[in-house]
Length: 387
Ligand code: DHB
Image (cartoon, rainbow, N blue to C red; front, top):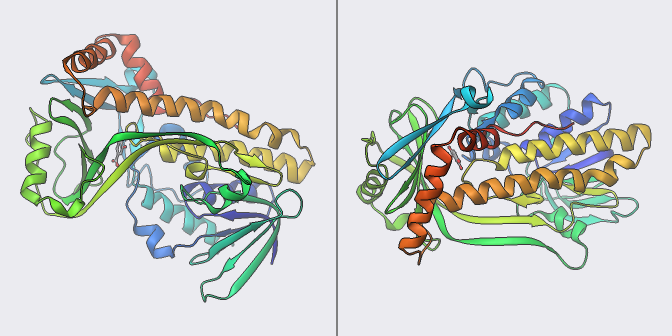
């Protein structure tokens, strides 16, 4: 087959990019190794910046504002006190709690309705000749070999990206940081315990009380990265969570999913080479504190979509030449914010009384100052999107 842009990965980045390209009259094929059912049911991120919601509105069919919930703030809890960060009052913006897999259902439905060539259960094994005449090869849904030739290849294929290996060339480079803790995440059948998210720095370690719907809740607590998710009883999980959000009585219910999320920061050394580029988790990973992952993917795609329009419609190379540098500005701001929220809220193993008191001093500096609260609100709700 032949297309103008071969997009590897039908996550938020790949699907949004196919939409933006179609708007510019550029045809694409999107392939993903996973099945449609897997993509539409895997529970991942939950918080959309206001700018992300506005981008999704532009596609049509987004239920972010109807099924999702607008959140006008978060609570930071520490030393037995809650401190609300009031987003509209500080920055006149909000965020939306809307599960990523729901956004993906909307995107997939909209792309299929528009006639997008979207191929599930299609595994890319090779990315070839990206300096001149790119091709991707692999196995289709029946296990038969396929080849797609394109003018440009985009890797929106997540943290274990196949496209990234081709873009990196012989030696993969990048910036990497691993953290000495992880999140134990649970999904449970219960009513919400709070109307907004609670980010809690407790003496026993961090916990986050989030939500998914009126009947399903998402909660996390800091744990050792080597924790076996099945090693804890439900009673132990609730006991840990309860202890880490003093002042709130959590509404408990059956836990139907549990997972351990490792904490990593990563930025690929190359975001583009020749006729290939990376977006989203293929290009970078942030630790989850602050919920920047999916939002950052959307920001990358707006820049790349514009660069590809200039390249493929106008024959102008300048946009694509500037893509990495432009994208990296926001990527590193989001890296810093995610690292900062993480370091301010978690107890690092081996930390002592100085570290603990310094952290509480930092939390007070932020929450007792309007400038501090506004800084947090500005980053959390999302910096202005460039396109
Ligand atoms: C969720 C995850 C986050 O990392 C975060 O900062 C807020 C919410 C969530 O999964 O609900």
